[in-house]
Length: 595
Image (cartoon, rainbow, N blue to C red; front, side, top):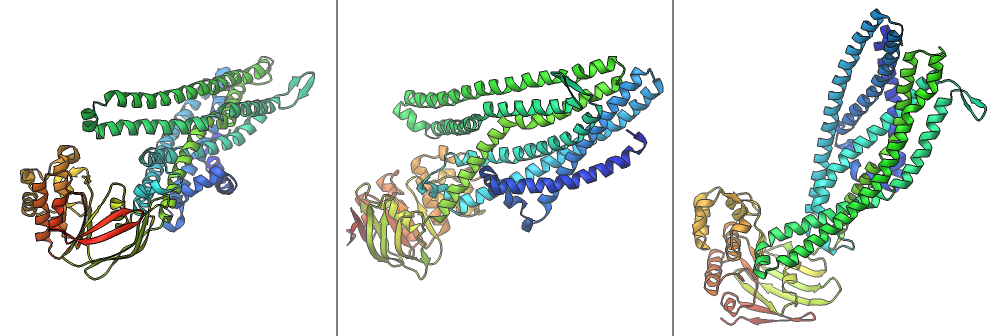
């Protein structure tokens, strides 16, 4: 190594290697994306981030990460030559050369540290930007297509979409970068250090036959054979890692449900049942984990064994040549370094197989989420048109997913200021009818015209978002800032005791009783003043007197709005003009309400 010209030589080497590596990298990615199933899955998830139509920033980041990866290989080559010269100086007892190479090492080490830190920053920047874009894209499509609700109607609903978005996105991004740059480093190191090893290697005699440059052939044959064996041992890890993610997420979801429904479980004294369910799910996690442990024991045990054997190869072969005076101590040390680099680089694909197995499981899970989201988006949607000031249903058919009719040919007209009460036996389709009117039920056909303006649906179990009471009252609109207005509304729905807690940030779904949560829903109606209000047993948790007060308040506050209620109590009759009775098998009748 000519250390006087090493800077110019390294810059030129890095540029040439970078251009070649970039071309090969792009070609390999394209081939994998076109010719392999997992490559197509990866491309489907990854490409939207790198699409140049969004901008060149992501591709620029990848280019920089790749450049510093190539430069890292060049630094390893320089260190290899430094080892040779340094140990040769020691062998020759050349003190001047010793201190000169110590100064060279200081320069190399400084550059190496700086390169490592910059490479880390670039890698993390790429991960964070990519993770942010992928997370936002999946969340947006999951919400915009209604998949968070409608994916239950697809052929293969996915388990734990929350875990796939939160955990699998991070694993997908980080593992893609680590494995791809590791592969680049491995291939470049193989090319670079094979040349060094070729120059240093001597002949090897095998069964009486002399093989020139035998060490090079030895390391390639050794690694290729052990890699094939390692792939065979590690192949089951793909499915085991997939099951580990699935079973772990299922167990975590079961724990969350116990927390969410803690009061109901306590009332039922259901601790033993819940314990059995939780421990059963946890046992499934542990059984699969033991399978992973024993498989990794075989996989890592094999890898560790072959790696330790490989350590002594260069010294066994070069040792006799050193004692015969054919090579220097520096040559032996550089041979050991080069042999190790070639061996480790060739072994990268073998030793990364378990990481690749986990990566495949992550890719499969994310593709499953994307598939379910796409299928949800393709489900039919009965969209209500907004026109005039009446609710008009024409030829409305509602069926179950199995095709059983719930409502057939419904024709009804509700004028401004009128209220319609929907009744029927359990399972007759009352709530499903409201879902159809909201555009949530994919098995509905017909025509729906609603009054212009907002429509608000209140379910029997009101949704209370995380955050402040102010945000819960205003949901789904931006928070109302007028404390006086909010306080007045709370008083009208008999929640005046909460007016001093508007900005308390807590889990209000746990603080408020079911009846208070339903009154909170009526407060939203008073704040939003929608043109159409749909109430699905929205007063089932309050007493009849409070129900009467809530309905009277809404009818007085919204005299021109259309009101549709689902309920069983006869006390509701006085607040409705007509009753739609669902009689089963698609039959229905409309009668005047008895006030």
